[in-house]
Amino acid sequence: MPPAAAPPGATAAAARGRPARLRGLKLVQTTAFRWTLGSAAVVALGIVATGGFFYWQTVGYLTSRLDAGLLLEARSLAAESRRVLVLRLEKSLAVDARGTKAYGLFGPDGAALAGDVAALPAALPPPDRPVPVMVAWERAGARDTIEVRAIALPLPDGATLFLGRSAADIAEIDEIMKRAMALTAVPAALLALAVGALVSLGTLRRVEAVRHACALVMGGEFSRRLPVGRRRDEFDRLSEMVNRMLDEIERLVEEVRGAGDAIAHDLRTPLTRLRARLDRALDPDARHAPVAEVLGKSVADVDQLLATVTAVLRLAEVEEGRRQGGFRALDLAEIVDAVGELYGPVAEEKGVALATLRGDAPVPLRGDGDLLFEAVANLVDNAVKYTPPGGRVGLELEAGPRVRVWDTGPGIPPEDRDAVMRRFYRVDRSRHLPGTGLGLSLVAAIARLHGLTLEIGAHQGGGCAVTMEAGDPA
Image (tube, rainbow, N blue to C red; front, top):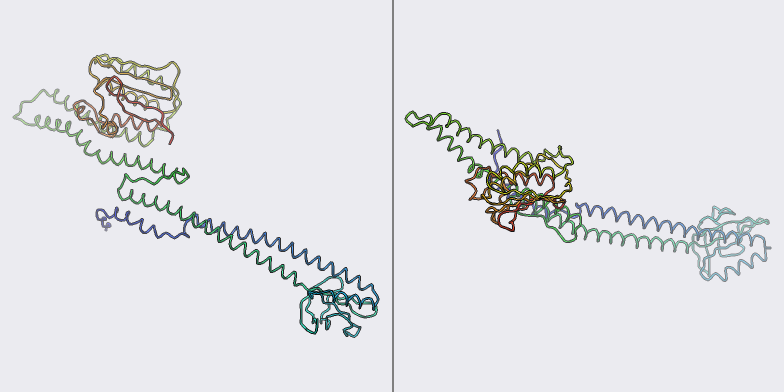
């Protein structure tokens, strides 16, 4: 069972309703914001990696200096006698106002002989490589357990020299470095997110405006265009391209809207004549014209109908660009000369002076020679057709390329100059002349196919001037 057709206006209403739903598009769904998230993560990782490198270098350097000083002092003390050793330990501890040293001299039985370390740790550190250990530390009557980097040297008399330095300075620097990395990475990431959110909001607004305009066009408002700013960025260039496409769509839609009436108007007369003539021929009571005359007029009417249909098909072929495959390098001057030679006798027979004006240099152009000949011939044919006897027609060619056909006929009113390039449109005063109303629309299609523009204006001496020349690239 076929689906039910949508009620009239449903499509337009749905299109107009889309922008309201589109406004609910979340910021996090935009590509710009996702790129910002990625950039913020990369910035944060970069800061953490850089801070980690500096942390590793700084803490490692301070630790190595601490260890080197501890080993140097241990070797110096181990070389002293027992009395000098005890005196140096006491003097070193006396000047240690910050309490960063943990020194101790222990007898072979483990009894404390000197220093501020109350007892040796259960696992003694090696004598040649300082390692972190926990020791019972006593100073000024206060007792505590602290972590130090220490070594334990056995002395020749069986005693043990324990030397340790507090790692508080290194721990403080460690804390400072970690805090600095956090205070740098987090604000940098937040700043990147904030900037990305602002950029994404601007992008989202522009995309929303474009989508809203597109929804209105889909709803039937073909005159709507995408907004174009003054920044000339990629969005503006894309909007300009889409607007040119919408201009072409609007032109084609307008032509389609008027094509039915125009076709009916132009085909009704020959069909009516043909039907009336055939009715009279079938009427036994009517006075019949000679069969040859009836058939001849009927064939003429059929030829006019076929000419209209052929012109429509020809125009469709050109507008679809199917002839671009036959483009080649050619000389436009040769085409202009051929058109002038063809229509010279026609103009002379009507009493119209046709003048072909061009320079001696060739005018190169890449295109379809047959189509260009047809376009120029159409312009000259119209000029000769609408110019009264005694008038003049000019066919001019300039480098550029630029082809201009002018005449001294009645001309085309300004309000009709754009309309005559639409299909089947004919100025009212020209409807008594033979034609399909497709000539100038075909010329315009051929011009667009070759990247040329078609402009209709007035000739200085009265009449009409049609110019076909190279336009700005799209």
